[in-house]
Amino acid sequence: MTEFRHTDDRLVHEGGVWNVVVGSFLDPDGESFTRDIVRSPGSVAVLPLMFDPEGVPSVVLLRQYRPTYGEFIYEVPAGMRDVPGEPIEVTAQRELLEEVGLTAEKLQHMFSMKPSPGMTDAVTELFLATDCTQGVADRQGPEEEHMEVHHLPLERALTMIDEGEITDAKTVTALLLTNRVLMQRDSAR
Image (cartoon, rainbow, N blue to C red; front, side):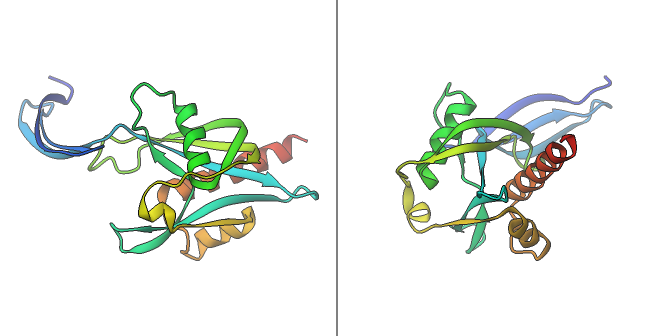
């Protein structure tokens, strides 16, 4: 045998969105081992990008309480892929509208991110949203009802990464990728 092989999952917890399993595997030498795994339908994350009349880019972020850390965290609008069969672009538009009340004329898929490969099979699809128009938010649950929406210059958001104010992996990745997209666009001119 030259590859790892997944042989079984034993369900230990069935949740509303996530399941926890003990996965059984064989290594390339034929030795068996197990790992605890959170099985996830995945998620989407959407960074709204806007420009002022002078062309200065700004972004919309959320500051939301996260019980797992017991603190407020800056994040891009995001949500679970909890509607079976829903295309990721539709999920992205739905979450953008629900959380910040925006609809994007253009959605650009930037990256498929594996946020925590040591514990979950989750994949977060990162999008850049442009040409956004204001709609009505439809926040779900106590964390979303109490979250703050922050519209700030992209440069300020990048500085917040350097200063340790923005630490969420999907948000850091989306901001850095967006900055790279804009730098490439500017150098092509």
